[in-house]
Image 1 (cartoon, rainbow, N blue to C red):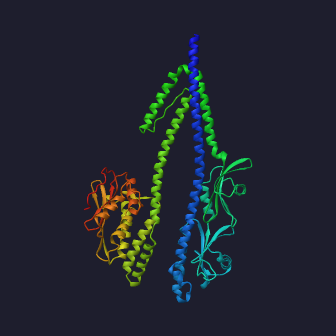
Image 2: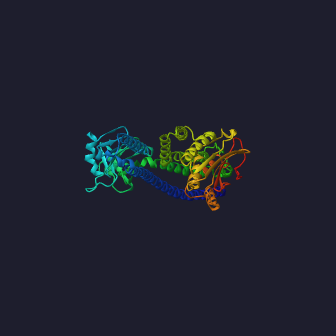
Image 3: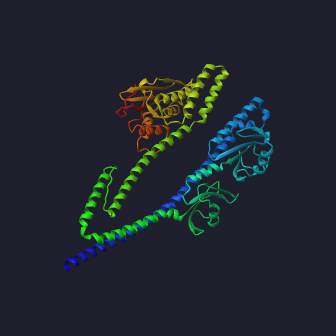
Length: 573
């Protein structure tokens, strides 16, 4: 009996020693993981601040670029000396500049308002009115016009006075543009990445500007008084609470400060520390109390866990395992189930994110309406009216209305193929009207059985744009653009072909851009190809070859509803 007891004692001692060594290694690993987690949290704060500041700077940089285009507009020159214009021309010019000012304000979320000053003609242009340069407008121009190019704090808001050239003693600007930034919009953007237990604020030492989010702790000014001036992560203590403070300088606004209490960040990690210690204690207790039942209490649950991981490795995310003995394996099983659930959720989130990214690319594609296309269309319309071609002007107006009404709809990113083709035809007819002396459009009717097929929006117009730009742009006469549609078994084939005279090398280069491993610039054709492949689960897409007309043939293949056929590369008939 004694010998048996000594064997059991040695067995228990060896077991405890092994567990102690394992626990020591586990503690070291947990410590290193904890340090890594803390480092990642710090890096996340810096990355968030850097991303937001860079985004704001990019928006303001775009505002400055757009104002330069606005102030050097050729119509603005006529307003310097209005005596050169008739009353009718003067009125039309002012209304045109006012419309461009409205577009300029609407193009950037950070702009709340903007005003154009024309001192030589004593005029002020706002998005609401055309008026004389007097009252508060004259006072502001006299007080702040000489500080053009600097951010100014006026009545708690940031103002930016800009001119068509630098302000100096020798050159008097013809125009001044006053831009008022939207505090509410900046607060809304800050609220989106405010951390629980902290907050975000902007401040500018030069003009005294301060702006803070509305969902944080409201301690921005006190944090600024206690924190230093350098960029990066800083630890401070305020009212007995430790805070992490991240500072990032902006090229335009000042400095962005992001802060949060360390308890809010480290609380979750500390809870896992307690769980880790509890696990160690439970493991030691299990070794002492149940060492004689290792086979029954360890191997069987391990085998069950092994089988669960094998099922998980085969892609079965519905696997769940249970253990009712109330020991460590129950904890492991629960965490396994929780991990599987989180893995399933992460996969779903990645899938949703891909859809959101595709929708964002679609929104961006919708927003990329060429101003030259818009202006040229209106000039064409105006020319037809002046010539008395009212029938042609009416047709062009119908095409323009159909085109822009389609772009303005935001109810769904999925439309019927007939609507998409109607929009594309409107665009092509407008272009045909512009270049009627140089090209001819041949547009075949969509088969009736294909009209209701749901497709992503704006998948045909980029192909037409590519044909106009790269195929027909250099032709001075006899240009042909042919759009044909047909049903081929369980798919629809839409072919866009021109007679631009492209070489086989050009076609091969375009085909290489549609490859899955292509890493270059994402053009309109590539965007459409990837969206079609994603939407139709690899059964749709674009195919490029030389056409019968001598130019490039772009074929779009769309599976019909219920069709199982994969996309082919057969010629269009």
